[in-house]
Amino acid sequence: MEEPRKVMQVSGLNVTMKTKQGLLPLIQNIHIDLKQGQVLGLVGESGSGKTVTCSSLLQLPSQQAIREGSIQLNGRELNGLPQQEMQRIRGKEIGFIMQNPMNAFTPVYTIGHQFMETIRVHCKMSKKQAFELVAVCLENVNLPDPSRLMKLYPFQLSGGMLQRVMIALSMCLKPAVVIADEPTTALDVVNQLQVLKQLERLRSECGTTILLITHDLGVIAEMADEVIVMHQGSIVEQADVFELFDAPKNEYTKTLLNARLKLPASLTMRT
Ligand SMILES: Nc1ncnc2c1ncn2[C@@H]1O[C@H](COP(=O)(O)OP(=O)(O)OP(=O)(O)O)[C@@H](O)[C@H]1O
Image (cartoon, rainbow, N blue to C red; front, side, top):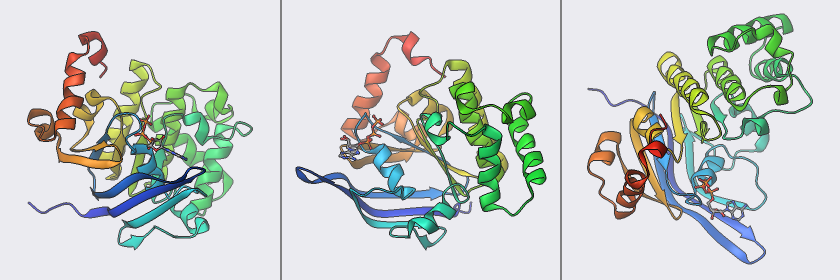
């Protein structure tokens, strides 16, 4: 069988932070290949460097971060691109869904206004066309009464609804890659399931590659094809999801998996 195409290739990525105490290395020598249509899980304990890695892939502005290495999207080098250029890439070519979706929206504009403005930045269309497209996209992620919802402000929606608005935006812009950083952590079980279902649709219907960062190994088992395990800023293991759960090779991975098995059943039955 033919290997899926590599959409994003990260190699030799190091991130060092300038702090008052001096230079602080945060992640070292990260290599990630994201293949078309795959869900790649990224796991590791708190502070292992998952978010720093994502911020680097998105080239989020940071005065303090020194990023070395290569981040290629469909063969184009992103590391060092001017922010103006990255703004065109973020959303349209690399989508992102954050743990706290409230941070992704401006509180003073309605959902409809923000959604329409974002797609009009990337695609040429009239306000009327954008309105109709947004309504269809919101309906597509099972958000009821889209015309009413578009008139609401972010604080008037639940976390799960906002996550689905962000997924709807990705379904609309069809980026090659979506980075989802703890997309279900802040949600109740019903909303978690809804968001995971919509992410799965994004992959199956749009062929989007998803980098899924989560603490929840249940979510990884359910969603991921392959898994990367990070520890203290480095990748310690990468394997097919079945292989990783059945026969972890690295000692830290074993500890991570054992920690889950030792939790009471009520805490592990989250999916
Ligand atoms: N701006 C910063 N200045 C200094 N240190 C930072 C900065 N941002 C992150 N760090 C440190 O980098 C390390 C990795 O942080 P990161 O947020 O990537 O962890 P994480 O794996 O995403 O954790 P969590 O699962 O809790 O979100 C942590 O030790 C954190 O304290």
